[in-house]
Amino acid sequence: MQSPSFTGGIGAALEKIRECVGDAGWIDDAGAMAPYLDEQRGLYRGAAAAVVCPANTAEVSQVLALCNDAGIGVVPQGGNTGLCGGAVATGDQIILSLRRMRQLRALDPVNRTITVEAGCILAEIQQTASDEGLLFPLSLAAEGSCQIGGNLATNAGGTNALRYGIARDLALGLEVVLANGDVWDGLSSLKKDNTGYDLRDLFIGSEGTLGIITAAVLRLFPQPGDVQTALVAVENVEQALAVLGRMQDASDGRVSACELMSATSVGFAARHIPDCRAPFDPAPPWVVLLELSGGRRVGELRPLFDAVLEEALDAGEISDAVIAESQTQAAALWRLRESIPEAQKHEGGSIKHDVSVPVSSVPEFLRRAIPAVEALLPGARVCPFGHLGDGNIHFNVSQPFGAETPAFLAEWERCNRVVHDIVVALHGSFSAEHGIGRLKTTELAHYKSPVAVQAMRQIKLALDPRGILNPGAVLA
Image 1 (cartoon, one colour):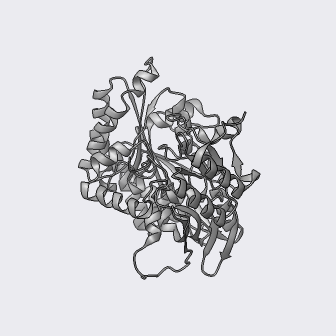
Image 2 (spheres, rainbow, N blue to C red):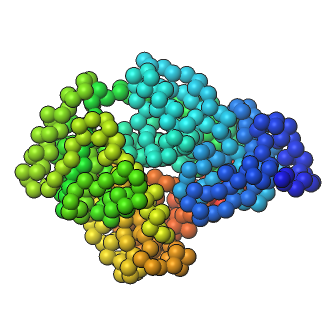
């Protein structure tokens, strides 16, 4: 089934775009377009004039120049794994998919950098680095399908942010196509460059509203020789932070992950996901997944790891621990953590919050937010989990037993406001690592200072005066 023929100036521009990218880069069949229109959480259903898949930066440049002249909206899309509707097109806009741009342009093991195009799959970048004995540490649940351009455009976080930083910290340079088709070649591999405004940081996290990232220079790190993993049981989040601090101090900051999980979230995973097992009986109120990495040899960190956990046990900070004795056992512990979002789908509707507060304020946030939500939505099951080491908590709320899902999800905005008010009062952020997209534009307008919002609008106007880049995202 083909989409209707286009008429007028827009139709002529679309025909030129089709000529530019060729049949391999043009999709307008309804069935073939469907995967690009379906948003992961099912909150949005997109519509587009076509999906355009350029093969290189020159084609991206030509497409944007044509769209800018004709006033056609362009929604950039990577792996379409975003969680805030930031890659959803509407109406006569086109989706510009970077999936064909997957070249490895350069690998410099001495400088410890890799230069890749935006459509490269995150897991493939990780593997390429590993094959050279190096590490690209950005790690997400969607790493098998998400693309590095989207990771940078949303400033993705992930499980290794505690030690290695977020996407912004891992990129040294970018290549970006601007709204009018101009190409900014900022593919610098320098760690020091103070020649004016940092345009790189401007485009990272802008969700394709200021320009389209087509390539990046990424930082690589030494591959750790040893990784130690444990799941520990704690009675409260204060104890979890005490264990984290103890491990950080003893290891000279080599903790690479510290993931917090509530009893509810662990129960969901154990109940619904095959091969997931809750290792503690009875289940403690909280468990923490700790990972320590470094050294040159397998097992090098184990004596230190064991000693710190024993100290924490003697101090009453943990009540029990399971230490992985192999990579297989470590993978099983990680599976418990990574399966929580999928498991929660089996419990009915879920209202999501991706929030961050100062690490020291996580206990206070949970003390306030859990009873506040339970009072607002009686019977709702709060399911907090996430990156304790950097203060990023996924504070999800599952519907009560027997509730009607549509009626529960209708409370999304009211629940968000209660939770986000607490977050902001603790000097936190209502969007830690998922971005704004279309889902959180109202929250941005509500919580961001008017001065900040006006500055953002002025930057948008300067770089995209016709407003063609990702219309409706970030700044509604």
